[in-house]
Image 1 (spheres, rainbow, N blue to C red):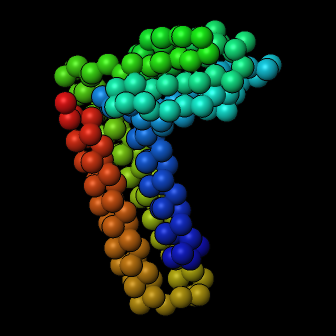
Image 2 (cartoon, rainbow, N blue to C red):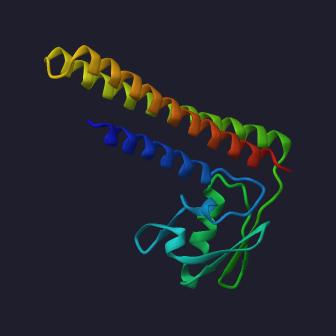
Image 3 (spheres, rainbow, N blue to C red):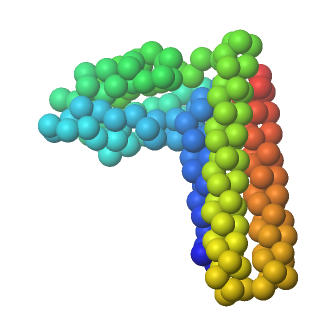
Length: 182
């Protein structure tokens, strides 16, 4: 594994964290809130955004324009079964999702969830670092690199790791502020 691979893997961990954060509901309507909702359709499970047009008419509402009217009940069921805690309002082939304000307690819970996601990402970053260092130690053991090269690699990978951990902290702080904003 080279340093480019190290950066690539750590960048993927950051991307994954950002995607997880998008699914955490705040008090504002966000298209990404529905990214992980699957609907029973056409004999299988299909993402809701592949069955409809989703838009944000205002900051407190999501609008879902369904293409196939036969799927309205299935989409309503998928929305009710999701962890969004939002009651859909159906009007023909249009479903509106009014986004309620979060209670203080719910904001605290969502902040904890965000912290758990961030901590999981930090663990992934540290595991990538450990994997890289183990590889370098094996190279040293097999006399492929010198003690100095091992030390230099260790210092560099630690700097890279620290930068990615810092990025996670910044992303978490931003998401927490977003969640706690009334």
